[in-house]
Structures are given as C-alpha cells and as structure tokens.
Length: 286
Image (cartoon, rainbow, N blue to C red):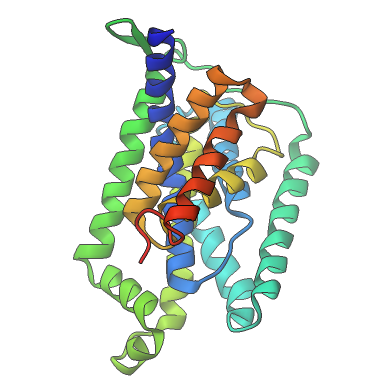
C-alpha cells in the first residue's frame, strides 16, 4: 500500500505541474481584468487539437508543435478579449460569464462539427518509455510535461517581473486608473494579457496530448480544475496557481486509489472547502 501511495503522489505531482501552468494562464486573466473565463478549458482543448492534427497530418512531434499552439492560442485570446470581452469589460459580471460561456459552447461545438465526437490519441515512439526511481515508475511524457510546465511558468514569471510589458501588466492589474495616469495604454495591455493567458493553456494542451485523450468535450472539466486551483491558491497569485496545481494533482491521484477514479475529484474539492474555511482568500491570496 505504501508503494502504491508513493506512486500516486509522484504521478499526481507530475500532472499537477501541468495543472499549474494551465491555472497560471487563468489567474493572469482574472488578476488583470477580473474576468471569469469559462472557455479556459476549451482553449486547452484547442491546444491539444493543434498538436494532435499537426502530428497526424504532418508528423510533427507534439513538443515541437508547442510554438504553433502558443502563437495560435495567443492570437485567439487576443481577438476574444479585443472584440468580445473589451466591449463589456465594465458591464456586470453576469454579462462576462455569459460571453465566455458562449465562447466555450462555440469552441466545443465547432470541434464536434469539424472532427466529430471520437476519442483521439497521439502515440509517439516515447509514449511507453518509463523512468524508475526505486519502486516508483514515471512515464517519460509526464516527466517532460512537468519539467516543461515549470519552464514555461518561470518564463512567465520573468516576463512579468523583468520586462516593461510585465511591469505594465502588473500596474494595470494593481490600479488601472493610476496606470492610465502614467501613460500605460491599458486597452492595449488587456488583450495582450488575455492572449498570454490563452497561450499558457495552449502550451499546457500540447504538453499533455502525448498521454491524455482528446475529445471535443475535454475542456469543461479542465475549466473546473483550473478554477479549483486558483481559488485554492488565491485568485490572481501566480505562485498560488503553481502550488495549487501541484496540490490538486496529488489530491486527485491519491483520491483515485483511496476511492474510485470517478470520485477522485472529491478529495481535491474537500481540500478546497477546508482551505476556504480557514483561509477564505486562498493559500496565497491577499
């Protein structure tokens, strides 16, 4: 039982890294614009689909297709914010939720129309490769996805902390009126921020496609996981998103062996409720 539990923790930790990258994009969007993006998981589905079709039609390895999915999802996020979110940015939260829910439905049904409801998988030459650490076995694609997710999260951290664009994004998030007074064009920063958030989830989609099946309906569960993570870690906190992702990944993996796979989310949900009871703003919220 001990080795099985260690195996579950290790597997959950690896998946949690990808969860963290996915949630980082969502918490960036919320932190800057206070927009609840219900289409976040569907954008991840598009990232998976881009890598799947590039692999199937052109033989491009999913990891090599990451720049393509990052660019296309950045463009999609930029256009969604510019033409759908921006006009209602100061409307009630209900309007924002309805718009992003509409985008989610459009993306899901477009995928259904274009390639049908079938489950699709990517099988590469390294899909079955494993690494052993004592009695614990780790899938190579999950290890690569975990390390790559940490790398992309670090790049995002550097972007926000060390560049003029990052400082403008943080200033727009902290105080939009003060940012305007010092000459920051927040109407230009908002679409870029939304695009960066979408690009993060596009990268996460390309990272998991070697070991996670693609269907048009795979998005909404990821959206729920992402919201669980950013509430757990603290809305708008990048470090909270990463650590929250690791916690949720481990909780789901351990829950799958203690309960059943269909009830694995019960453990992460219970963890979320406990955190909210004792720290309502999340672990890293302020």
